[in-house]
Image (cartoon, rainbow, N blue to C red; front, side, top):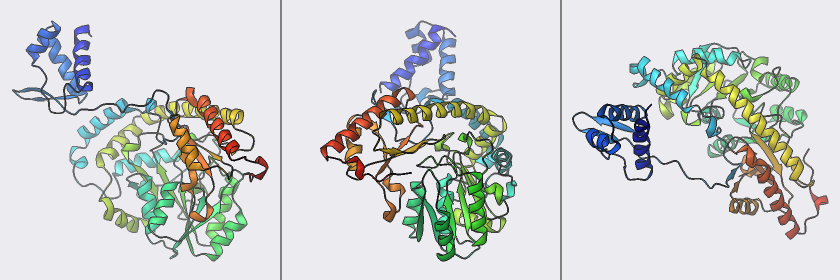
Length: 457
């Protein structure tokens, strides 16, 4: 391409970035741009067509070209170290590839995508998802899948709707995904917690909960646990399924990061009870595009009508455009290619984080040691004010999450969650070094005695 062509593209984008051209503003005419850049009108037209293709400008017949929308990338501090954000690393999000799929979806499914579609989700997408789930050892048929607007919607519906066992209460791990905690508390559902450590759960405690507390379902995250990073063994999964079968309890399995599990022999709980005891929830937000808001849930056939009824009362149907684009993305192999990049990057980041925690954190501070995934939890001495720690780190442009919101009120612990998903790997070591220094400073001010800290195993 000519330098004049590139010059026009860059000039228009810079004018928008500098707010000299705003939403709805008219660009200079083709003749004026040709004179300004001393090039042919044909070169200007080609540049404008490319800007139109990028959805930066649009044409009005017999009028000219106008700015579609003003957009400026949010500014971030150059020294920012983000252990807080939990979405995918922005540097590897497949924007352009998925844009091709969006355009193809519009071309292929015009009528379906812009009208009310199947409440259970596009059948063509459910077929592709059923094929994809086989790679995760989830063998099912498209008729058992329901597409939801993200996994949070699926969890919310499951919390509210009646189950075939006629029971009302729920068991969750402690800690667990805060979105599930919020949903249960907002809906005033009686909830019991079972402590989870990197060593697992107390199965006697779990059996007692199942036997005596009218449990509708047990919600758990079997691998790449949020926030601990814990993984259940296959034997533990079989044992959980057996207890659920014995006491007529359903299992809601949130397998949101299955793709990052390095253990090729690890199975989902669904593999041990595929005929109706385990409800499998699969999100694409953490390894793909969170704004897409598409997830799937594999349900027992007898629960599907009720689930769809509850879903219909909230949003009629999940965005057909997102569904159609995801179907094409799965079918053409782009998703598998994207996953290879994702796995390599996140494994590298987690290894760097674990090494940094081992090197810099004082020996009286306990932290989990995930095999892979996004999350690691640091448990703090009882004297530390977690909010103050987070504030002091924020002053240094280091961001972490208060893990107390991931516990029920009676189970709360002083802990922070670190996410490796969006942090720059080159900043991890410095970030943990600063975190360690801040913890040590707070402990010294409190005249902290490390022998008083309760060990977390």
